[in-house]
Image (tube, rainbow, N blue to C red; front, top):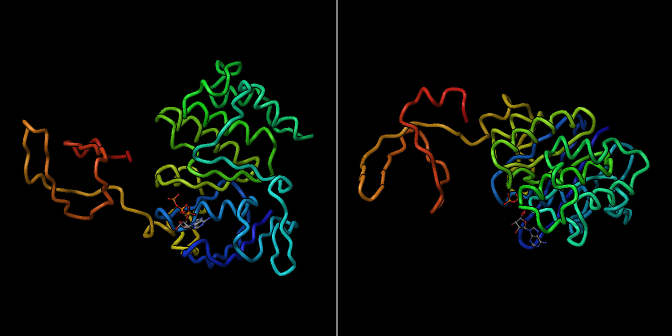
Amino acid sequence: MSLHIDLHGRLGDFVFNFELSLPLQGAIGIFGPSGVGKTSILRAICGLERELDGTVVLGDDVLQDSNHRLFVKAEKRGIGMVFQDSRLFPHLTVRKNLQLALNQTNNPIFGIDELARECDFEVLLDQPAPSLSAGQRQRVAIARALIAAPRLLLMDEPLAALDVDSRQRILDFLHRVSQRLPIIFISHSVAETLSLCDPIVVMAPGRVEAVGNAQQVDHLLPRRRGTGTVVNFDAERGEVTLRLDEFAPDFTLEQVVGLVSEPNWLRGRE
Ligand SMILES: Nc1ncnc2c1ncn2[C@@H]1O[C@H](COP(=O)(O)OP(=O)(O)OP(=O)(O)O)[C@@H](O)[C@H]1O
């Protein structure tokens, strides 16, 4: 199955001129700084964004063709979507949320118990949805998207609410899932994207900047390591001042960063 997208137009003041054609196989990453249009493109693929003009073709199915006033509704596209803050039906238990999604397909590829085991929420199956933490809700949302047996799964920062262990577990699971159905995956984490996705689509504002494997797009990905010099250390106030010798990542105020005093510790780690 292949995906062809040619979308242009504006969302507010933001201009899109987005063209992408690629075979859908395995997990495809979309990477780019905040605000370049990643979420909008996923929304357009699954039929939630009507403001952009052009064409979206999935396999043999034309999902959008603005010249012919064709726009297939989201629920008819057979595409699953997991957002960063996916919601569940609050009046239902986890199991009933999943059952509802299961009822929408004639050819399920996963069962409820299998997904609950893979995504590690078996003990939550009979809990009411509102009692779940953000990370638990996110794992159930991934299962819910899969249980409807989509032909393509779109994921927008799906692991953001998860702790490190669950993140690795779900990444391993998604890797196996991607061998059965294609996934398009957005993450701000270079490590997550590289570990799951090939190829990676790197976006510049409103357009594709490059498509390629990790090696081919490496020069466009943010640097994750560098060296610095401690220029001041005030133990009483708990303040360290660093001069970064090689590069300056986009630190934000109040961001918590880790410092490693033994560089060997970093080898092989993110
Ligand atoms: N419905 C809309 N109306 C007006 N502007 C919009 C609309 N949807 C998106 N935009 C604008 O389009 C641009 C791209 O937004 P989008 O959320 O797609 O980027 P993103 O790359 O996913 O960002 P982030 O990584 O922060 O989630 C932003 O400038 C945003 O304000």
